[in-house]
Image 1 (cartoon, helix red, strand yellow):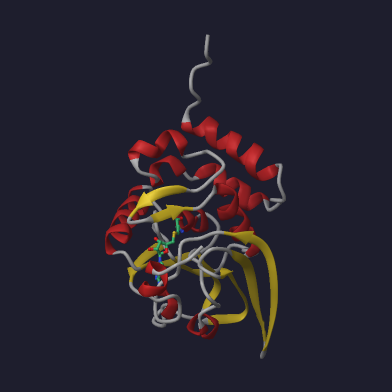
Image 2 (spheres, protein in one colour):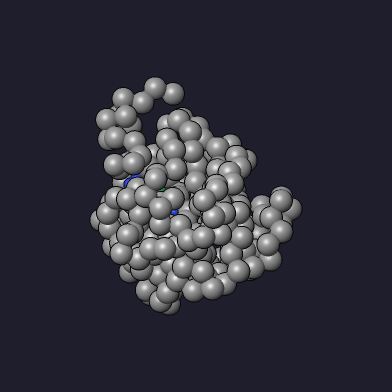
Length: 226
Ligand code: SAH
């Protein structure tokens, strides 16, 4: 006889153990946040049975919610302590924003698709993530009215780190972003140290494109060649 299906909490615990803790994720606060946020509520209903699998999922409008491992890895790379104000570019389902919301003081997240932003905002509110603000617009311009940010995470593929985001980063702050071509990217970390930038390139990833003034044009995406 088959074992009964696990409830979401148990599947989440299994996800943290098998997909995150067993890999290179060591920040206990990040692991705890990943164990708390009900990922299945951030994916469309017909995908819920897949919510805790080790990969990305479609969330509508041609967009995706990232693999749990990548969400946790990028969050860990931000090295958050608890008192930060964080900007996310690419709100999508709101899942990454919910994880950040458990770890910092305030989260501003921007989404260019109004329908996705509305859905994310409603869910985040329902789940009590009152320290998250969802904005609609071109996140490649950052959120000048809310700057400076202690950390910035870009969750769509950028040709390079948009300069407004660098301008809006506080001293000692970090930006984590997937940078590269439309087909594949590498996670980059940019840390501001006075007038200098310390940069690192790490994990290869594949994100949907960052479309906007300091990102890709709509046409680049339509004409893409893998
Ligand atoms: N972080 C999301 C997944 C991101 S998918 C989550 O946890 O679900 C990438 C998202 O970036 C998509 O929703 C896409 O519409 C959005 N996006 C792309 N270009 C953007 C831009 N210039 N400004 C804001 N959002 C953008």
